[in-house]
Length: 483
Ligand SMILES: [Zn+2]
Image 1 (tube, protein in one colour):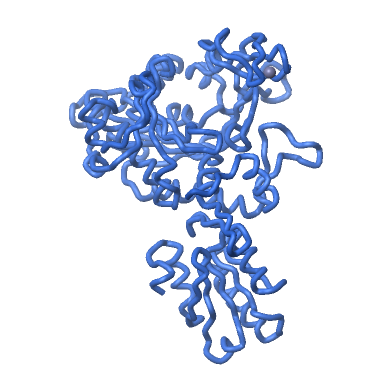
Image 2: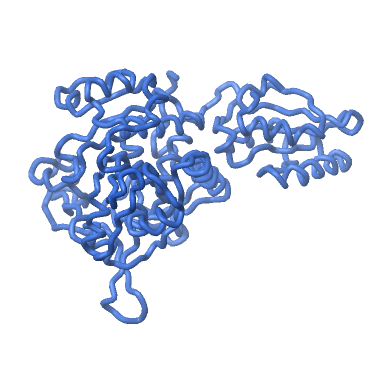
């Protein structure tokens, strides 16, 4: 689309105006890096999480889910290295006094956006601390990621679920990071929600992925470490070519990059807004042999949407050493006890996913004179709006009956105020895929007019067919033009 892209600030204004996202506790001035979500945003977020869970857990045979606590035994964070190493260098601009965080390698090399030099204040651990019980000194932490409880519970889950390698454990939940400079609206917050998977494989067979066949022909926009060093543009190539040229190190990473990309595309995201970028050597953790980001073309540039790292057996070994518990599992094929490798750790934020779907759905329709939020019906907060054409009791009665009936199955709304055009516009801005209008003919022919959000096309259908047609439209079984 040639249309100018919405800025992140404009998106924040739109989200506030539509009651989707507010600064947290705004009546007291808000709190930087924290947000509250309004009614329709809760629906969108729940839909994102539901679709992620369905795609990554319920539809697969090799992945199960857990839900760990937000505060856990602090030794988990000692073992993981977070207590010691989860720090940023805290700096302050000598000129404009704005605080920021930089990487250790950037000290003396980078400057503030105003051009000023940075003064190093010190290291800051990004974990939020709290106390347990009335005694000071019993320090605990709000979890900075969901991943570690997957490792800590690894053996319990693997054995009770009778999992055989390769398998994954997934978790969706809140995480907290005391960011020095939260910014770009929901992109970098202090409280956020993660959707993560740790995918475990046999250590002696950590490179071969049994599912790779379906991903091979897939074309991706690829930016390797080599291309970045030579300041080259990303290249379009198939996964097969990228593996053959050893650009992507393992089949597992390739498979997960394609899988994650496909999840976004299956929910209506725009393919051209995605690329994959390999981490440079100095970005890699010491235990990681390769790491890629699925990046999205945000209005403030290409940024990490989802990191997918090869973590070897680092985390499990750390927990074995610190807990002194045997976390190895029995491998039936080799009759040996093994500590699996993490071949990939797809880690995605609900907030960043929300931004992707919102940016790709946002359309300023000049002809209609309103915003049309073209969200996939699965993500859309309200699936249908039900309107009586005019405020006559007999029309309202039938419209309310239809509303009450559909409400049992879908999140639908009833709207009787303002002109029908105004109600269509409101529904468009909420991303409601269908509007159902009850008119005087409906009383006789037991039919209603259903209007498509994206094309404004209208068709007449029987009231008793509504539920089935709505379900098929939401599931993507049919398109509006085929009704
Ligand atoms: Zn400055």
